[in-house]
Amino acid sequence: MSSPPPTTKTRGSTSLVVLCGVLLAATALQGPLVRLLDVGLVRTAATVFVAVCVQALPFLVLGTLLSGALAAWVSPAVLRRVLPARPALAVPVAGAAGLVLPGCECASVPVARRLVAQGVPEAAALAFLLAAPAINPVVLVATAVAFPDHPEMVGARLLGSAATAVGVGWLWARGGRAEWIAARVRRPPPDDGTPRWAVFAETVRHDVVDAGGFLVVGGLAAAVLTVLVPSSWLDGLAGHLVLACAVMALLAVLLALCSEADAFVAASLSTLPLLPRLVFLVVGPAVDVKLIALQAGTFGRAFAARFAPLTFVVAVTSAVVAGLLVFGGAG
Amino acid sequence: MSRDTQHVLLVLVGGVLVKIVLDGSYLRYVRPWSAVPVLVAGVVLVTVAVVGIVRDLRGRAVTDGHGHGHGHDHRHGHGSRAGPSAWMLVLPVLALLLVVPPALGSAAVAGIGARAAPVATVADDPLPAGDAPALGLLDVVSRAAADPYGQVTTRDVTVTGFLVPARAPAGGAALDLARLVITCCAADASTVRVHLADPQGLLRDTGPGGPEGDHWVAVRGRVVPGTGTASDGHVPTLSVTSSSPVATPEPVYEY
Image (cartoon, rainbow over all chains, first blue to last red; front, side):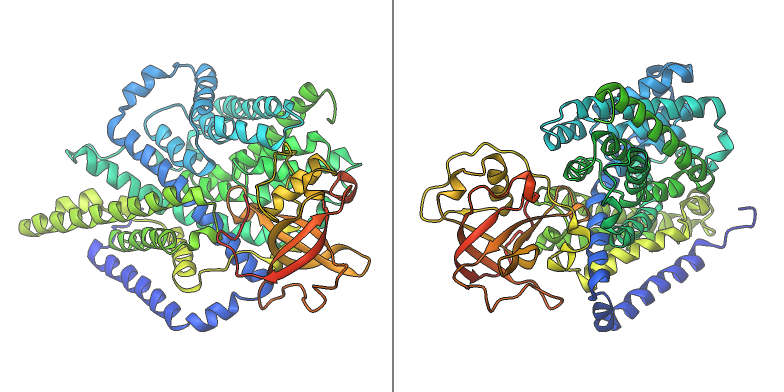
């Protein structure tokens, strides 16, 4: 950072040349490349990887558009007026905002980042980050459709995810440190007479390029794990409640399914009791490999290394407590 | 990564998103309703990149006139650079420009698609009129689950799917007819299947699909009454009266 940056012109042409080189080399090697990717598991993984990217990119773009609009047109003063000043109160309010915004994991990360940049307390922005993908109307309806015989699943999911968002927010308000979040997140948008629409376009470009690379890393991890995690993991879990909860929590992290789709996967695992499946539904939207990669890219690695384990523990605990309360047992 | 490279990369990413919607290959990865979001995302990315390029050209023209381009560098200095992770965006571009991975099929049934599709208990609404109406595989399985002695056991229906080795071979018939069901994207694919009973030996010479491709067939037949319940894992048995190879349907998944 302290060394003077090389001039834009030299570096610019270097990376552009590299990009052209990569494209040309890949085109020249197209035949071998296609054959390489056409072998059994690799082919499945390639399809899943592209599917995750194609599914997630529009939501990421939507998130960056919201983020850009926040940066360009909503001043920090407005946000301060809307949110309660005390973090302890701002956290549940921000969490409730997630309830009405039909977002998705990938969309809420850039928005939460922008909230932090606009001076919203971190704990509140993080509560929004966790609540928006987990308890919005689309997800709750999908859950109701996937579990027609168990309508109580919707309430249990709402309870578990809300408790996760608010719980993590409060814990962060007490013990979180500002320096864990990369300094660049707080850099305000330029205030040098740049027109608003230009601020908007700059923010969108910056957020997409920044987060998009990490989204691809997450998609790659999810694709490999989807192919490699043997389905036999789930056999014989029915009788072991604690083990089933642990495996389902781990699966939620590894498979990185969209929060709109995970209820259907959970519903198909009908040999398991409801409680482990609820753990799957509460953990998935809060922490998975795709999200960890996105958060590391957006807020910095130091943040992700602390936030992901914290969220995982709080989510599993919230899900188990919510399940025991709503189902009155394993379900 | 410099601003210029970021702009080129965004044009490429946006471009492939637009391309897969226009040529229809997006249906290998996501559901039909995703066409609009994917297309819009592609257009937005290309627009953002073009806006950036135009602003840079104008900015450079102005600052070059001042000699050192100081204002330009100050505004767009290292803050507008992207880290090395941005290079990962090249991967989906290459995958979609050069390879275009195929839709999941019989090769995925043993692995990722091993989980069974959730069977909704639907009302056994009257079947479409006509001789052996075409039904979706998921529809047949759902109807059998709702009423194991319902209309699909008393009337012929036509179902399309690809052939896979039977999960529970019985009575010499070793084939299941399968289809993949996706909820959001191909990453959440799950399998729906019916077991094929083949008293006339129509499928004797047909095997399950392998690495070379899937064997898609349209099968006419009737569900054996009493099958497709929880006891057989919601895999009804279809007694085949005729079968013919068909092209891969479009869209390739059921929803």
